[in-house]
Length: 260
Image 1: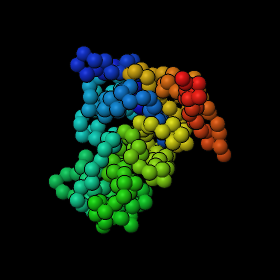
Image 2: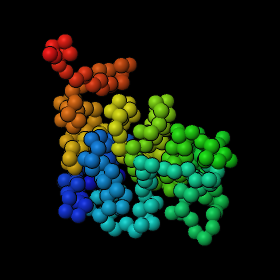
Image 3: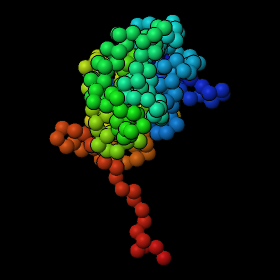
Image 4: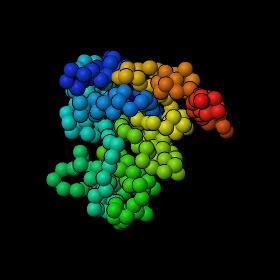
Protein backbone atom coordinates (compact mmCIF):
# COMPACT_ATOMS: atom_id res chain seq x y z
CA UNK A 1 0.00 0.00 0.00
CA UNK A 2 2.80 2.45 0.90
CA UNK A 3 6.41 2.36 -0.26
CA UNK A 4 8.84 5.10 0.75
CA UNK A 5 12.25 5.22 -0.91
CA UNK A 6 15.18 7.37 0.26
CA UNK A 7 12.98 10.26 1.44
CA UNK A 8 14.68 13.54 2.35
CA UNK A 9 12.94 16.65 3.63
CA UNK A 10 14.26 20.03 4.79
CA UNK A 11 12.94 23.22 6.34
CA UNK A 12 15.00 25.81 4.52
CA UNK A 13 18.64 24.88 5.07
CA UNK A 14 17.86 22.50 7.95
CA UNK A 15 17.68 18.86 6.89
CA UNK A 16 14.97 17.05 8.89
CA UNK A 17 14.54 13.67 7.19
CA UNK A 18 17.51 11.66 5.94
CA UNK A 19 17.00 8.81 3.44
CA UNK A 20 13.83 7.38 5.05
CA UNK A 21 12.79 4.03 3.51
CA UNK A 22 10.11 1.58 4.61
CA UNK A 23 7.06 -0.35 3.37
CA UNK A 24 3.60 -0.73 4.87
CA UNK A 25 1.08 -3.34 3.79
CA UNK A 26 -2.71 -3.37 3.73
CA UNK A 27 -4.29 -4.09 7.13
CA UNK A 28 -1.07 -3.22 8.99
CA UNK A 29 -0.61 -0.78 11.88
CA UNK A 30 2.87 0.66 12.25
CA UNK A 31 3.97 2.82 15.17
CA UNK A 32 6.57 5.52 14.52
CA UNK A 33 8.81 5.85 17.58
CA UNK A 34 11.44 8.37 18.56
CA UNK A 35 12.22 11.40 20.69
CA UNK A 36 10.61 14.78 20.15
CA UNK A 37 12.07 16.61 17.17
CA UNK A 38 13.33 13.50 15.36
CA UNK A 39 11.06 14.06 12.32
CA UNK A 40 8.04 11.86 13.04
CA UNK A 41 5.40 14.50 12.35
CA UNK A 42 7.38 15.76 9.35
CA UNK A 43 7.25 12.26 7.88
CA UNK A 44 3.45 12.16 8.20
CA UNK A 45 3.15 15.57 6.55
CA UNK A 46 5.29 14.41 3.63
CA UNK A 47 3.11 11.32 3.14
CA UNK A 48 -0.01 13.48 3.29
CA UNK A 49 1.37 15.95 0.75
CA UNK A 50 1.44 18.84 3.23
CA UNK A 51 5.22 19.09 2.84
CA UNK A 52 7.25 18.62 -0.33
CA UNK A 53 10.22 16.24 0.07
CA UNK A 54 13.53 17.51 -1.27
CA UNK A 55 14.26 14.07 -2.75
CA UNK A 56 13.05 10.49 -2.70
CA UNK A 57 9.73 8.91 -3.63
CA UNK A 58 6.45 8.02 -1.93
CA UNK A 59 4.32 5.41 -3.70
CA UNK A 60 0.72 4.80 -2.66
CA UNK A 61 -1.05 1.77 -4.09
CA UNK A 62 1.66 1.58 -6.74
CA UNK A 63 1.26 5.22 -7.81
CA UNK A 64 3.66 8.07 -7.12
CA UNK A 65 2.35 10.65 -4.66
CA UNK A 66 3.41 13.35 -7.13
CA UNK A 67 0.82 12.08 -9.63
CA UNK A 68 -2.15 12.43 -7.27
CA UNK A 69 -4.34 15.54 -7.27
CA UNK A 70 -5.33 17.13 -3.95
CA UNK A 71 -8.81 15.59 -4.23
CA UNK A 72 -7.40 12.15 -5.03
CA UNK A 73 -5.06 12.48 -2.07
CA UNK A 74 -7.94 13.45 0.24
CA UNK A 75 -9.87 10.37 -0.87
CA UNK A 76 -6.85 8.13 -0.32
CA UNK A 77 -5.29 9.43 2.90
CA UNK A 78 -6.99 10.31 6.17
CA UNK A 79 -4.85 12.52 8.42
CA UNK A 80 -5.48 13.20 12.11
CA UNK A 81 -3.14 15.88 13.53
CA UNK A 82 -2.01 16.10 17.15
CA UNK A 83 -4.66 18.56 18.26
CA UNK A 84 -8.33 18.46 17.28
CA UNK A 85 -10.81 21.09 18.44
CA UNK A 86 -14.49 20.50 19.08
CA UNK A 87 -16.87 22.61 17.00
CA UNK A 88 -20.42 23.39 18.03
CA UNK A 89 -22.35 20.77 16.07
CA UNK A 90 -23.78 17.30 16.54
CA UNK A 91 -21.62 14.19 16.36
CA UNK A 92 -23.40 13.18 13.14
CA UNK A 93 -22.62 16.56 11.55
CA UNK A 94 -18.99 16.40 12.72
CA UNK A 95 -18.49 13.02 11.05
CA UNK A 96 -20.40 14.09 7.93
CA UNK A 97 -17.79 16.84 7.44
CA UNK A 98 -15.33 14.06 6.67
CA UNK A 99 -17.31 13.30 3.51
CA UNK A 100 -16.07 16.58 1.98
CA UNK A 101 -13.75 14.94 -0.60
CA UNK A 102 -16.77 13.03 -1.97
CA UNK A 103 -19.38 15.80 -1.79
CA UNK A 104 -20.86 17.45 -4.86
CA UNK A 105 -23.18 20.42 -4.73
CA UNK A 106 -25.18 18.90 -1.90
CA UNK A 107 -25.20 16.08 0.63
CA UNK A 108 -26.56 12.90 -0.95
CA UNK A 109 -28.35 9.92 0.54
CA UNK A 110 -25.12 7.96 0.05
CA UNK A 111 -23.23 10.48 2.21
CA UNK A 112 -25.81 10.11 4.98
CA UNK A 113 -25.72 6.30 4.75
CA UNK A 114 -21.91 6.25 4.83
CA UNK A 115 -21.83 8.59 7.83
CA UNK A 116 -24.27 6.35 9.71
CA UNK A 117 -22.13 3.32 8.84
CA UNK A 118 -18.99 4.96 10.23
CA UNK A 119 -20.85 5.90 13.42
CA UNK A 120 -21.77 2.25 13.89
CA UNK A 121 -18.21 1.08 13.21
CA UNK A 122 -16.78 3.48 15.78
CA UNK A 123 -19.46 2.85 18.41
CA UNK A 124 -20.91 6.35 18.12
CA UNK A 125 -24.44 5.67 16.89
CA UNK A 126 -25.87 6.50 20.31
CA UNK A 127 -24.06 9.85 20.25
CA UNK A 128 -25.28 10.99 16.82
CA UNK A 129 -27.51 13.82 18.09
CA UNK A 130 -25.27 14.87 20.97
CA UNK A 131 -23.27 18.09 20.77
CA UNK A 132 -19.52 17.57 20.42
CA UNK A 133 -19.11 20.18 23.17
CA UNK A 134 -20.62 17.69 25.62
CA UNK A 135 -18.11 14.91 24.93
CA UNK A 136 -15.19 13.68 27.00
CA UNK A 137 -11.68 13.71 25.58
CA UNK A 138 -11.85 10.03 24.63
CA UNK A 139 -15.27 10.43 23.00
CA UNK A 140 -14.11 13.48 21.06
CA UNK A 141 -11.06 11.61 19.79
CA UNK A 142 -13.32 8.79 18.65
CA UNK A 143 -15.39 11.36 16.71
CA UNK A 144 -12.22 12.75 15.11
CA UNK A 145 -11.21 9.25 14.00
CA UNK A 146 -14.72 8.65 12.64
CA UNK A 147 -14.59 11.91 10.68
CA UNK A 148 -11.28 10.87 9.17
CA UNK A 149 -12.68 7.45 8.22
CA UNK A 150 -15.68 9.10 6.54
CA UNK A 151 -13.26 10.05 3.75
CA UNK A 152 -13.09 6.30 3.02
CA UNK A 153 -9.27 6.39 2.99
CA UNK A 154 -7.05 3.41 2.30
CA UNK A 155 -4.31 5.00 4.45
CA UNK A 156 -4.72 6.48 7.92
CA UNK A 157 -2.12 8.83 9.41
CA UNK A 158 -2.39 9.52 13.15
CA UNK A 159 -0.11 12.00 14.92
CA UNK A 160 0.00 11.11 18.64
CA UNK A 161 -3.62 9.88 18.73
CA UNK A 162 -3.79 9.08 22.47
CA UNK A 163 -1.17 11.16 24.27
CA UNK A 164 -3.70 13.57 25.81
CA UNK A 165 -6.09 10.86 27.03
CA UNK A 166 -6.41 9.01 30.33
CA UNK A 167 -5.17 5.41 30.44
CA UNK A 168 -8.60 3.81 29.92
CA UNK A 169 -9.38 6.08 26.96
CA UNK A 170 -5.92 5.39 25.49
CA UNK A 171 -6.59 1.64 25.51
CA UNK A 172 -10.12 2.08 24.10
CA UNK A 173 -8.97 4.36 21.27
CA UNK A 174 -5.95 2.23 20.34
CA UNK A 175 -8.10 -0.93 20.39
CA UNK A 176 -10.52 0.84 18.04
CA UNK A 177 -7.72 1.94 15.70
CA UNK A 178 -6.28 -1.59 15.62
CA UNK A 179 -9.70 -3.15 15.00
CA UNK A 180 -10.61 -0.71 12.21
CA UNK A 181 -7.23 -1.20 10.53
CA UNK A 182 -7.93 -4.93 10.28
CA UNK A 183 -11.66 -4.73 9.60
CA UNK A 184 -11.43 -2.10 6.85
CA UNK A 185 -8.13 -3.36 5.43
CA UNK A 186 -6.46 0.03 5.64
CA UNK A 187 -2.82 0.89 6.30
CA UNK A 188 -2.31 2.90 9.48
CA UNK A 189 0.74 4.90 10.54
CA UNK A 190 0.61 6.22 14.12
CA UNK A 191 3.17 8.43 15.81
CA UNK A 192 3.44 7.06 19.35
CA UNK A 193 5.32 8.00 22.53
CA UNK A 194 4.08 5.24 24.84
CA UNK A 195 6.19 2.18 24.01
CA UNK A 196 3.94 -0.20 25.90
CA UNK A 197 0.83 1.05 24.13
CA UNK A 198 2.63 0.74 20.79
CA UNK A 199 3.79 -2.80 21.59
CA UNK A 200 0.31 -3.86 22.62
CA UNK A 201 -1.47 -2.75 19.44
CA UNK A 202 1.04 -2.43 16.59
CA UNK A 203 2.06 -4.91 13.91
CA UNK A 204 5.37 -3.23 13.13
CA UNK A 205 7.58 -0.33 14.16
CA UNK A 206 9.61 2.45 12.59
CA UNK A 207 12.24 3.74 15.01
CA UNK A 208 13.58 7.19 14.08
CA UNK A 209 16.61 8.99 15.44
CA UNK A 210 17.64 12.47 14.30
CA UNK A 211 15.59 12.19 11.12
CA UNK A 212 16.92 8.79 10.04
CA UNK A 213 15.73 5.21 10.42
CA UNK A 214 17.34 3.44 13.37
CA UNK A 215 15.38 0.21 12.87
CA UNK A 216 12.21 -1.02 11.21
CA UNK A 217 10.36 -4.32 11.53
CA UNK A 218 8.21 -6.30 13.95
CA UNK A 219 8.67 -6.89 17.67
CA UNK A 220 12.16 -8.19 17.01
CA UNK A 221 13.40 -4.59 16.65
CA UNK A 222 12.14 -3.62 20.13
CA UNK A 223 15.34 -4.52 21.97
CA UNK A 224 17.06 -2.99 24.97
CA UNK A 225 19.94 -1.90 22.72
CA UNK A 226 17.64 -0.14 20.23
CA UNK A 227 15.65 1.55 23.00
CA UNK A 228 18.84 2.72 24.69
CA UNK A 229 20.10 4.10 21.37
CA UNK A 230 16.75 5.77 20.62
CA UNK A 231 15.97 7.34 24.01
CA UNK A 232 19.29 7.24 25.90
CA UNK A 233 17.45 5.13 28.45
CA UNK A 234 18.23 1.77 30.03
CA UNK A 235 15.20 -0.53 30.15
CA UNK A 236 14.19 -4.07 30.96
CA UNK A 237 11.93 -6.05 28.61
CA UNK A 238 9.44 -8.45 30.18
CA UNK A 239 6.27 -10.23 29.08
CA UNK A 240 2.96 -10.42 30.93
CA UNK A 241 0.18 -12.66 29.58
CA UNK A 242 1.81 -12.58 26.16
CA UNK A 243 2.08 -8.77 26.10
CA UNK A 244 5.62 -7.32 26.00
CA UNK A 245 6.37 -4.61 28.56
CA UNK A 246 9.11 -1.98 28.57
CA UNK A 247 10.21 -1.09 32.11
CA UNK A 248 12.61 1.85 32.55
CA UNK A 249 15.45 1.22 34.98
CA UNK A 250 15.96 3.72 37.81
CA UNK A 251 18.77 6.19 37.28
CA UNK A 252 21.94 5.48 39.23
CA UNK A 253 22.55 8.44 41.54
CA UNK A 254 25.14 8.93 44.29
CA UNK A 255 23.80 8.08 47.73
CA UNK A 256 22.94 11.09 49.87
CA UNK A 257 24.71 9.35 52.77
CA UNK A 258 28.02 9.53 50.91
CA UNK A 259 27.79 13.28 50.35
CA UNK A 260 29.75 15.54 52.63
